Amino acid sequence: MPESKAALPRTNELGYYEMRFESIGALGANLAGQILGEALVLRQGFNGANFSSYGAEKKGSPVKAYVRVCAPECEVRTNSPVEEPHLVALFHDGLFALPGLLQGVTQDTVIVASTARDPALMRDLLKAPVLRLGVVDALRIANEEQTRVNTAMLGAVTKASGFIDPQAVRDTIAATFADRYPKLVEPNLRTFDRGYDELVLVEFEDAGGFAPLPSERVHPDLGYANAPIGGAITNGGNTVRRNLGSSRQGYIPRYHRDLCIDCGRCDMTCPDYVFIFHQGEDKRGRPAMVMKGPDYRYCKGCMKCVDICPVEALTRMEDLPELVCASEVELVGPPEHLANMVREQVGLPTEADKDTNYRRIG
Image (cartoon, rainbow, N blue to C red):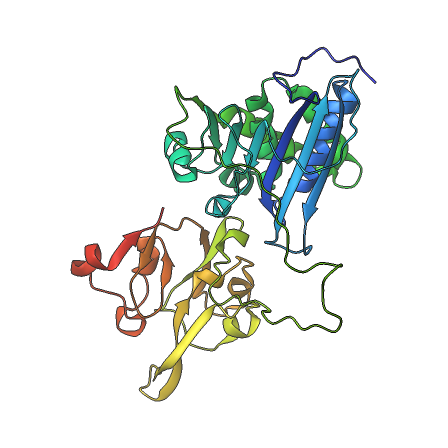
């Protein structure tokens, strides 16, 4: 093991520098934690540990990855979750509204967020009581390089930390992909370099008046000691009111009403019942079910509908939601996309009413 030449910028009372990655399934936060832990321990000479916490192993599920590192003479004697992190990385801007996201964050914590927003705006949206916050458009970088968000975020985290050796992380990325996916080595190294170079890190003069959110562990009402034998789950949950937009990875299907033939193939292939039909008339004036368009609250961006559409009425477009349209169906998307739908069938307002029928969400 090499001798560590870098010093940790600060540690807690146990001598640990701790990082927490907040993400969703399929963005690669678990692998990012593994790569970073390996780089710090095997290539920089620190002692450390990494592990992840997640529920169902599927795209869109919440994921937390933890990296704990200490000086070589210190030993890691805990595997508990990181509750008071020195650095927090937010892998998806769909997570920003989740309650408790920044538990344990203080003004000394560094936040790195995957977003195209301005750092000052980002701090206000998060209500983050921090003095240092960095932003990087990791999703755009990953889409352009045809990789994943994780290596772009690794580059940004490496730069924001102030002590992680970028070459050590690059070597670990190369070693991770070289055997099984050699063609992915160069794209991921480019993604890492761009994440490192394109990070915008801002230091604020004060905490912005935001109060720290103390770390609290959730204690369920029922557990192994008091769960009734043969008990039933009285509230199984429902996804009707849940926005699945945080599951997307950069693209949404754009609907071209003028090309649609209402064949319903998109509806048959969609796993989440995104497409909305209503009783209307076909192009010959006969009664028929006519598609209004996709409801993006339930769209996970799998693009199966784009692949199956026989007339290219659904095309791939970058996911940049800006406005919510106040119509019969809540349609979320850029204005030029919403305006592309036929207004008589979708119920969209006229251009003259645009200011009163649209509200900004981002």
